[in-house]
Image 1 (tube, rainbow, N blue to C red):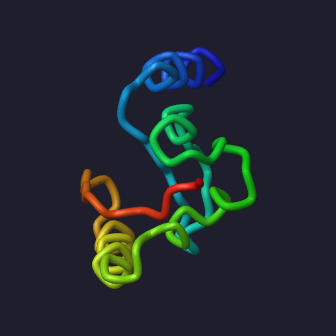
Image 2: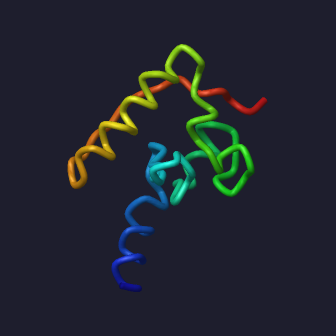
Length: 88
């Protein structure tokens, strides 16, 4: 298990895209370091605890729909692009 976690972390540590894993309630379980560079928030910041709260209001419904679709289809990879509030 430890080796698997280390490979996972190594894969995303220097990724240029934000990789976020959230649970069924939308709470962050993993957020790549790129979040700080792209969003302006460190991954461990309170704002990132619930990444869905950072989504632009016009994209919020679509993001929540994608989360529900992913919960209904375990094992299926889904992706989406959404505008987020940037930390100034």
